[in-house]
Image (cartoon, rainbow, N blue to C red):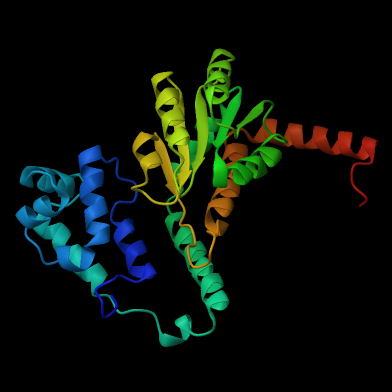
Length: 286
């Protein structure tokens, strides 16, 4: 924390790590958000004080700690103290101009993503869900639209029917209905800050329609994570005027690898078919 009690980016990421992989209720998400915003103070509060801070009941705070795997709130508080009192990185990491610091922060986001991928089970499970969905709808609105298109461009080389949903309004609901009617069993949603209301509403509609939801989003407590069957977080860089999406883009390609790994024979066959077609049509100059 700095002299004003504000946590540095690295500390925020370590607090968010406490909730990684947890399936939180809306009340528990409110508690988690309060801990992220006020971690420095909350690390020394009682369960009753945290409950007042988050505007929930004290038993809710206890259940929240137990949902994260702790015996109770005191154990979670001890872990929170370890996180917020951990020494900051060496001064050299913050050196340089604002452009250099922004790029270094993205490097840190990638390192953090690499650490998360030590456990491959969630990504593998997400890949299997998406590989089996025919068609495969990919949702990405506003800032996430280019990333949805990027993922879909490569996914179409190994999946027979990828459908990008990158526009809102009534047309979005129509295309979700059409994908479900055509046999889709899962949806990949890329939802990044600032979270479009239409994207969150689309996730609710997809869930009500029976689609399994895999979400690439910026944190375990984003609105998309609450609605997803599998939430895959990747931090967004916020040091420049507009956000940097290096880690979410990397995670999208990791997820595509998991799709290929879920059906390797089919993926290889489709890749070979594409190469033969591309060579015949002289698509590339080399």
